[in-house]
Image (cartoon, rainbow, N blue to C red):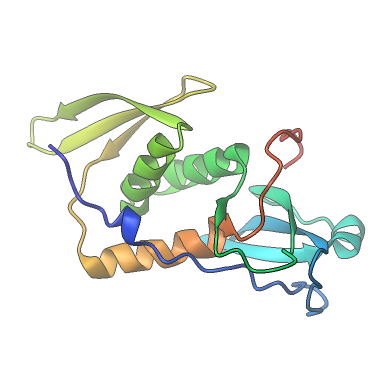
Length: 178
């Protein structure tokens, strides 16, 4: 059964293009670091100038190097695969029944970071999808959901804030340190 999640209707937000530590605005062509940081009961994306990041690296779920585009292209790019998986895994471990897991899980299947290996229905009649990492074969059992437009918008805002940038990211760089 196909379920609509509204994933194709997302209007992705851009980086703030400003250093979180100094509040300095990044210039076109300038490189900076985006980091996904656990804050209280959630996550926050913060951007840092390269100099500030080198002086004050912050413990994070993951980080990646970005570049402010010379001109706005209108395209958006996902965070690197390793960051996406650590974010997904961290949410799964902390809140295994969170609605965001369903939406993010489907998005990661589309990006070929995860693959769907099974659909199950438990004794209570609840539908589950079993997802597997394409790299590690780690499995995740995620409850399938029908989400309201309001829920989709809330999840969209969280994913936009944490996982997207408007500059292309070099996925070939080693991901072991981020």
